[in-house]
Length: 181
Image (tube, rainbow, N blue to C red; front, side):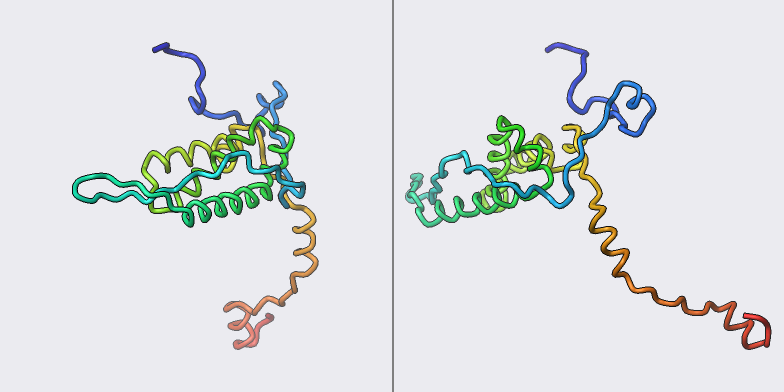
């Protein structure tokens, strides 16, 4: 096995706010906080057949379960639709080569939601989420950041009611003893 050399997640990640990053031109690509509003591509993976596996007389039996197969596929399509509404989808839309990995994340997420998930499935889910930028570490690894939603921030600033501050204990004490409050 070779030794040395840069590896994914070895050492500290670049800080986009540092002077060194500014000097070398390192910056993060801003993704829209409101999410991607374009069309999601067609789910690229075929349906996965789900089987009911049981043992009878020390023999393993495997029966196709059409209902579970359809339910799994429907869940995958729902997760696919959700994923394509995230801010990360704005970057995926420009990188069709990434769609297969996103689909594998979807498939693994559907497996992990079921009772059939193994520790390896859950580990794979985390790795896929990093690769497609669905974790904070994955965002940094891909050079992305989710931009602040400035319109929503301004909207909440305008609609937030101003409540007068309640008098503090010092003010109440001064008023009680006849001092200036």
